Length: 143
Image (tube, rainbow, N blue to C red; front, top):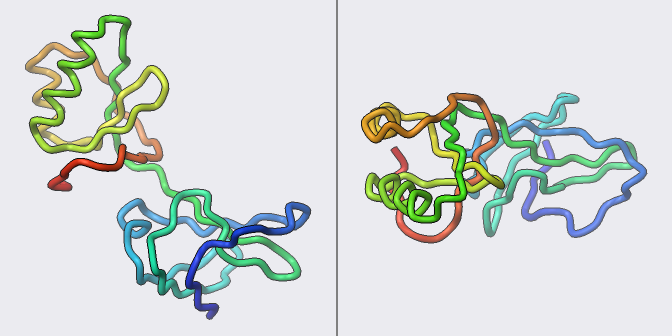
């Protein structure tokens, strides 16, 4: 098992890439273990958490990187109506849920409270599986 302390600042782009699939909650941790798709085992003892896509180890045969797993999310398409967009952010934030903004979409974790809120407010949404990278900053209760 290789012990990892930080991301790789540079790597050989000619080498094949091997993913280590990881959940968002694990990525937020500083100490954890994982197994890459080729079976290589890694222990992480980090000064700061790594992020989706970070390369963390290179051998003479491959570069290893983190690949965040998709999770159940709800997507709401933003329109051109600025007040409606601001209201959407306010009502989701009022429940202390994190959001991700992906181009014309707002993404939030799939939670019964959010579904109920969107239904009550007659806001159309789509349930799907996607990588969720919430905006940083602010305060969250992580439901």
